[in-house]
Image (cartoon, rainbow, N blue to C red; front, top):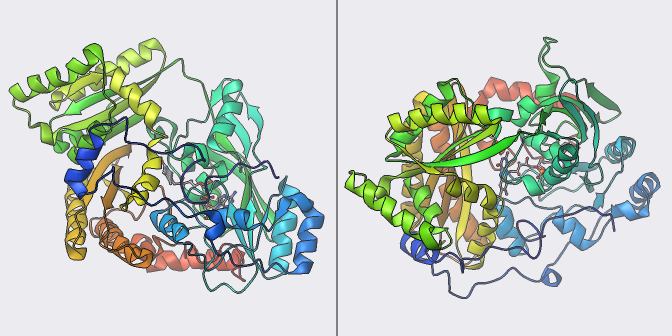
Length: 556
Ligand code: FAD
């Protein structure tokens, strides 16, 4: 036993937690109407682990001996379960493949170093043996950045950072913390909170992703409007390369040439192993509120988010769902009791009498943090902007509900797979001037793709992560494939996913705002950063890793 926590080998999160629709009476009719699937039909659960055919480990004896000498017997694991856990991330294709027992290439061994010295020993031993080394954080990526290339002949070593999970020091005067790269979100926040600090980085995958993984994929959390993306939060780092260590001190800013810090951000394991980072931390806020608002249309809602981003207030979260996502969120609600049960229908009645088309309404969540006076000021400014764009305040109740449920929603994909539907996401960012076209064209592209493969699909979107010049649009799509054959399901999935990703490029948006490149988005990298840009990146990767030993196949 290594003491390191892992997710389910076949799906999201931990055993014992799963999605249920039984307490959400409006969901089944909604899903039936939108994609023709009966949520109460008997599902097909994932297979038993014993039924998988796991290829045998090909770890050579001499490398095994070196690794055991360096780390200790217990921390060099060749068990089938551990190797399978480290084979895939949590993208839709990963989930379909693992359920189908599709395991063409599994890491030969998983190693659990205790500190940076041990990481160095592992990196050097694997490169000396001309093996492949894949750093593993929480395994939560959805870009296909962990899986060994299927035809890889060399020994494959998964390096799990899970034992490097401590907050090492807090520089209170600077508001910086030095944290080991394998710390999961809750681990590092618990340690920081106990000292009165927070990093404020909260991706939806917070419970199952690590600091190193966030840095390696250029992650963004839901509170990025206040705390910044991980690229802003990360100030210094230590990164183990074959034979050497990059040491970047935490600096508020620097003009020392092209940024090596930025080269490591988003490097997806291709430039070595991040062992620790200095990150910006903030005093725990006095108060924290999420308030819900409703807008009459998507155009009004997006205009309001833009105006908030230009105003002199800076909420932690600015998020708004399109009409489809709003309808989905409402269908996910548990029945309310007493006054609350009456309040919704009364409000909707009033809005209809005022001329709202409720099928176009868009639900928004705005987050606030700070002192009473600060919150009062921010809510006042936002309230005026919402009103100007025809919106209304729903209040803190629905906002709190969103805040509590946000980490449970990801379990829905496994539930959908059980009953034969595929669901996944694609997200992007673009300038404010391009967002409305990007949105309309991408929804159209998804619907055209559904028509092409002859399925009834659903696509929805929200705007989140606002910046000076633009914002992130996050699309979720779901459909029942017209086949039970996993490989054909994946083909149909790619028709939809590719249509959406291509729409991003065609509409001046990026291939990913915060999920990274991996193998899933690599096809569009050249379109994203230009052929000359990929040349520069290829040169960098080759200079650091001429033998393609470090997570080859992902990124470029
Ligand atoms: P892993 O999946 O283990 O690894 C990802 C990549 O980073 C791999 O290439 C790996 O080799 C490399 N890597 C990991 N650790 C290191 C290290 N120490 N040194 C060098 N390379 C390393 N992302 C967001 O940004 N925001 C979200 O809100 C968000 N929500 C999500 C919700 C769901 C349901 C899912 C499934 C994913 C979500 N993601 C989100 C994507 C994912 O959680 C992020 O990409 C996350 O940053 C991955 O971290 P990880 O520790 O799980 O990394």
